[in-house]
Length: 181
Image (cartoon, rainbow, N blue to C red):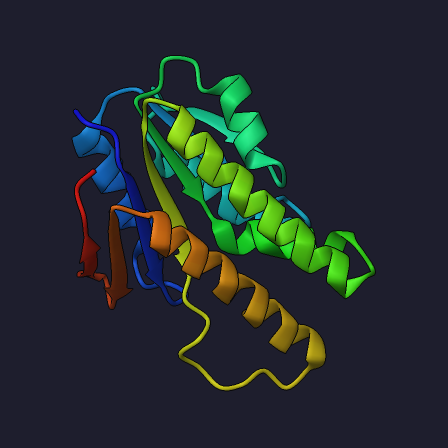
């Protein structure tokens, strides 16, 4: 298997995670699942437990809310496929962690640059899951618009680097980009 980077975008409940997991199962047996979401309330705890039950028991899970490139490098072990689910929560974690908007923008860019460096350095296929937030209405709040902009920039950087990009529509993957290394 040759390594590649695959970005899967889509709206909420579009089938992104299921597609990513099915793809990972076809690409390798040794999978590292990187979870960026945290159990901040009972509903999220329940969702996380359901997601864990849906994954094969042989997969390793790394919970990493930030600094994921660094954390993956230290924990990849012998994995030949890495799923990051999801970039959306990663950006949210960064956004909620600081007060200064300029610093947040720099932090997001740094985080994504470090993730791309990690992807380039390691001999594994990476499957990145992220929400496409640019297709809906303009958010009402300043914070909502800022978040949409940060995630949009992160998605663009990752899409430029990715070998393959898919957009999920009602559970159906639509290929947007295919480029072999």
